[in-house]
Length: 160
Image (cartoon, rainbow, N blue to C red; front, side, top):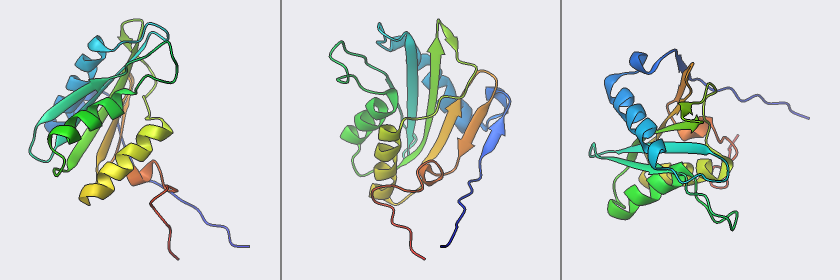
């Protein structure tokens, strides 16, 4: 038997104001995107903002549906929207945040597994890493590539 360990590197910020300007702008767009979320069942409103390589920002928010699981996560809404308009451009970064009862959650909002896979394929499609900015009221966590959040993916075969 061989035992292996996977470690990741990530940055932790105390407030949005500590983020570099470009990341702060993206985070603020994600926070605003929560206002348009349709979450009558969970009251958990998620916003996402994607920055493309041309600098354009596209936002999305979660869209729930009584015919669960027909809804869609904010991350996928934003990514699919951006890629439908610019299929050949790479995504530089995505910011993700949630509000519960009108306030940003204390905990960092992490993308679900389905969204991680969509982000990974978007990253692989253009061959450039996607920075992921995960926002909570008390801290923000940033990874420089989606690979840090999904080391064992469908398309990412580990080679010894």
